[in-house]
Length: 327
Image (cartoon, rainbow, N blue to C red):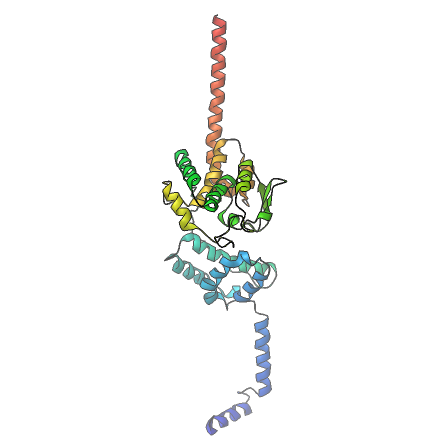
């Protein structure tokens, strides 16, 4: 502060160009009040997290921290322009899969919708366009491949990994659900398996079939977890070991062992013609019928085959009657 600058400030105050100290304090209070009433994306995210289980937010937290916070954290939804979203989507698609980019944009949309439903913010003035994703790949194994895999599993020295893969094959449960399974979640008396905090969020239960019941009865109990890690704690992953078993069985490299075995389970049921799509949806704990429709064509084939059987029976009956009439 110099004498000249002080003189300028006094002159501006005299002509009302420079606000007084009281006016400055009032202005600061007004700004602070506005900030407190401002629901930015960052603030909406913090509020959103309070309504969700912490465990289900782990991936979302990474998506928010790495891709959303820096670009939109200090903005209110009404301040976000279509061009902002376009730039984010284009930049992400340079080195990330469309499914990953869709998850990031979907999280942003969920946060905004959360604020709208609670009357905290104004909606976006446009619709967020999602990249096209083709994630309906249904992994399957031929009967020969499946037989070879079962033979390799029977010879596997690590019972935990052997039973883990068989368990997925005979239940169709997701990898995360199986690794999260505790012995207290197995209801041997009533014949159910409880799936805690599944992908859909709400606890589910599926039947405990006899093959799985026998597998669990022979399974070593070394922890509260059904398929624990070597130290007895929760198993986080076993990609390398499971991939080695699949390689030994000659399973193609693009077949994801645990996720693929869930598809094998679903495909076998659908192609049998004995399980309707609604039942299959419940067994797979899909939230909507649309998620189960990828297996519909397999059921259609089974129904067509059954229809041909009916034709064969009718023709055989006709031939038999004609032969009897000739006699």
